[in-house]
Image 1 (tube, one colour):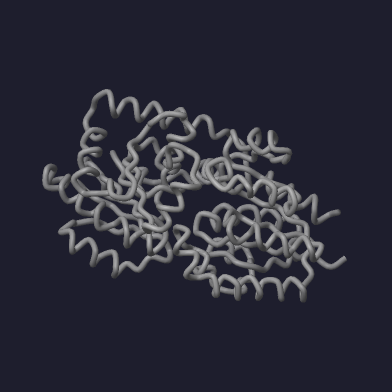
Image 2 (cartoon, rainbow, N blue to C red; image 1 turned 90 degrees about the horizontal axis):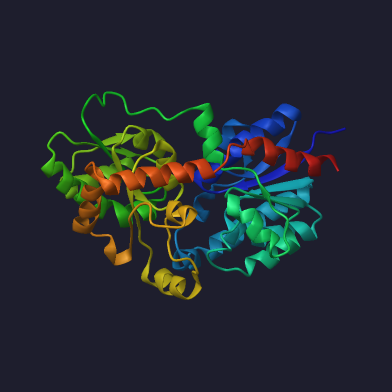
Length: 374
């Protein structure tokens, strides 16, 4: 028999990291596996044949998506042309619900079985996506413990596989930045997308400068995501008058050695929880995205650790609240030893324990393998 063919779509850096160990396990089982689609450096190292750059899919907010619809449509058309030519048995779609749910409909019509890894956050907004998942996805692998029950109550079987960060941390625990010594460390994590960095870093850097002025020995570190321009980041830091060290590493390495983090909402917030680092979580989108979110979003909090804990574990600042003085004030309260810092540490430990101890890559690979073998 010829080796199986797999379509794999993972657009963002977090999805790339989540999917890479899954592909490694599948290649161990089928050394000749032909895997093509969209992904980043980690997936390419595991043998993914990229059909195009996935940068067009790395956007924040609804209004930003509208500006790229033409490019997204052309990317989907190219993927489907390759599907017609190569006829993969299975598609592994990772996160990216806006793109992948639409793609899944086209794949289903072409007889391709679909595994969705990381569910759309239908529990937060756009609950109508549940019906689309039922109609278009063969296997749904979820990463938060409450999601399996949520989808089951709506007639959709989902498997809680565990959060992929746990597996990554178990295999390669984060290492604190070299040379930290006794100097306290503040981690700035402005996001993994250029637009996030442009919107958040100026305020974060000025807040860090306020803290650095109060503590002259304070060491500030900033991890650079793969698609972030280091020159642009240095220019923004210079405008803020901030001395910071840039790390060509993921957020966990910056957070591991930090006493506190100023962190953009996203995967890095969970990384901070697993590192046991109190943080101030920030987020900012366009005015149109914010207006639409007011109509659509149904959860009272946007920081995932607060959502998982069911209460405020860390402060979260949104839109106009993302101001240097306000960020610095929240940071001071968490920096000092006292009840606020102790409560944050206890809450983060609770969240980390609730994420489970599974090996998600093994369970997702098993789901894909079952469909490949049918």
